[in-house]
Amino acid sequence: MTPPSPFEGRNDGLARLDRGYYRGQAYVHWTLTIQDRKTGWLVPIFYYKFRELLTHATFRYSIACPIYCLMPDHMHLLWIGIDDRADQLNAMKYFRKQLAIPLKTLGFELQHQPYDHVLKDEERLEASVQNLVEYIARNPERKQLVPVDDYRDYKFTGSLIPGYHELTLWQSDYWPRFWRIYSFLRKNGLFRPFADEQPDDP
Image: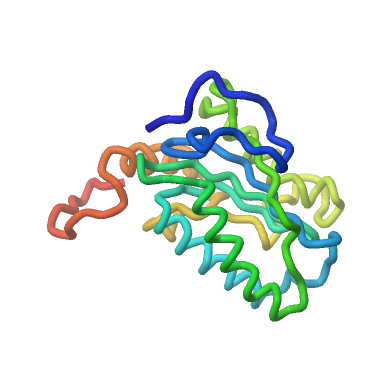
């Protein structure tokens, strides 16, 4: 099931769109904010836990994450549903619940609701998605956390595609490989017998 069309505009994080917009091959830019915009939680031990929990969420709910960017007081994630099992509202509910545990250990909590923007048809074109990914990636640059054009060196930005840990955001062939893998996963799903694997798989 693909999201209904035409897409509506930006969501204010309070009154969400119909659930169908978040299911199937939906493209959603999520922003999770720390309560009271507090800082100090973004440390390596949390980042490792974040990656682990994101891995479980993407597998469990059939989602690809072409970029995430953790800022000192909030987090950005772009999620793309892989198949009909994908349900980003359920995925985000699960992800936030799991994130709350390590955050609480550090003395922090998430703001009550995440902000989301469901991408419109024209925003789902490959070039538009790639531009959005760069825009998200440049957040540390805009906040002067890294020098201009050094946003690729920011250590809390990355991507996660289920089953492809070797694919990293800034490698030279990232986008051709990402779209090829995404197309492959849409066609074949996340799970299949190992005996079916071929050397020319993505």
